[in-house]
Image 1 (cartoon, rainbow, N blue to C red):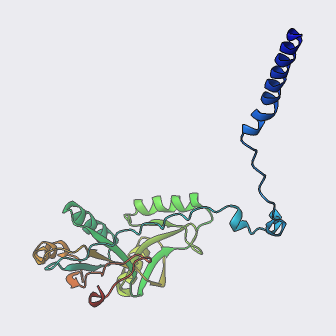
Image 2: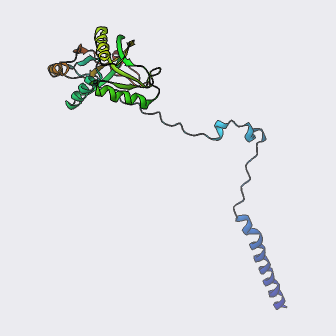
Image 3: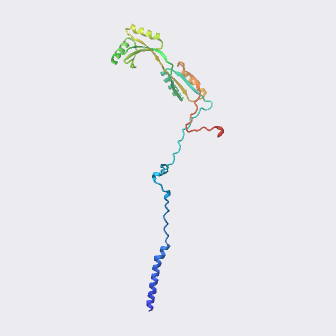
Length: 243
């Protein structure tokens, strides 16, 4: 009898242990969190969202303005050389300034129109015929001639360009004495003139510049106001009293 009671008591303990493992342990587990509450009134379609809110990119930094050119220092002046009407003399003056290591700006302006007189032979039927005539002129002693291809003067021959009509007429007579019948064309010409503006320098530079324009008709050395520094568009000038 006692054996049956002990067996029943043992089975009861085993059942209690199984019940504790199956029901008590799940109660100790951390309960799962409830999903977040859905709020339909705050939901929007992608088509209703402005594009600016979908992709927000940082604005690039503003570009750095270029540095303003340095103004002329106290005691410095700017010079201008000219006008130089002859292109060959302008090129020579440009080389001299460069050899002296002087910074400058070369400017070209339209000169006053002048009247010129061209002695010429009218257009030939071909370039080859005009070249044969040029060789004949050389044999006659006239070496100052050139082939023209200007509009209306194609394959014509220039025999000289004069600023004084009397000189042109005398050349016509010399040609006629050799049996060459040339013609005279009166024309208006506007030759460019050149100016050279130098970078700011000391007043002692004038003594070096004066000999450079010797022999150039009408050219002089003069002082001009130095250009003011040009501020970049993004710069702002702050008045001194507000700083």
